[in-house]
Length: 350
Image (tube, rainbow, N blue to C red; front, side, top):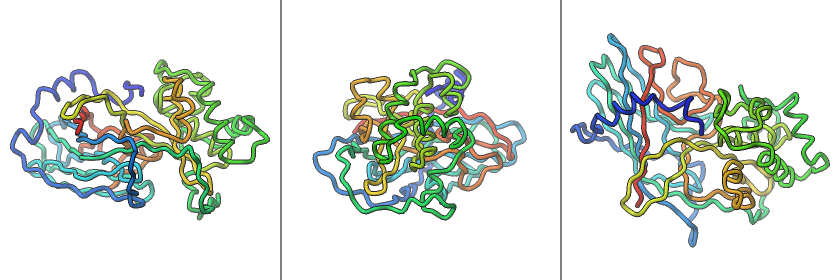
């Protein structure tokens, strides 16, 4: 993941490291609601898994005279591959803390509102979770799903263009040049996956890297995990295959009780086959680790945590700014104007 577009400056991070986490300063902590699950997590045995606590630590220095400081923090998703069991955050003075789920994307956000902040604000949130290996490459056929492409169809959002992911023009032409005679969505998606892995090099060079701009990545021939996932999603949608963009963090290796700092986010994707359901792919991991190329189609490992799904995301409650191309880092506004946020992420193995 390209860090230039997201990570706060080194000065800000140094300030963050110098300030004790909120819970160490005596602020009371409030349990948070567990993000809703689209479907109950199925009991699984013999599946590889990771468990632990994920924590985000945030520092904001609002401009002098700020009347209202607002902060949005993405919460990890709760779904068939990931179960969030506990969550908490402090309640700073003169603040209101809520949590809302955006109905369009299904993403959940912690929302903090502070009236008349008097100084630098330190805030943190933590989640206890379990992540399971998501292995679907056996491709067991099931019930046919409705994937109508009209506006009222249940997967219209997963077929539509976004600001940096067109589904017409030259991207559509490229999509149909990949295995052009293949009508089976599963086989077409595999051909698209192979083409993305083949055609892109993993590199964060260039101002366009890390934005998920599929035309830029296609022309440049390289990108990071955001660009790999975005190109797969764009080509699949242009081909009429519902696909969605997922963003979270890779979990570092660790022993039970050990704690590590996470340097940057990661992205992967899913596509839908009517009688198979949602199938995960990780083309960037397949590029970085060629031994995972076969496994990266239909499987994603347990060494990750998922936070947000989708692009051009609206926050809940709504922010004053435009929809976010991506949302993974905390975002703040001072009296409706974006303000810089320094943040760091830590994972403690269980």
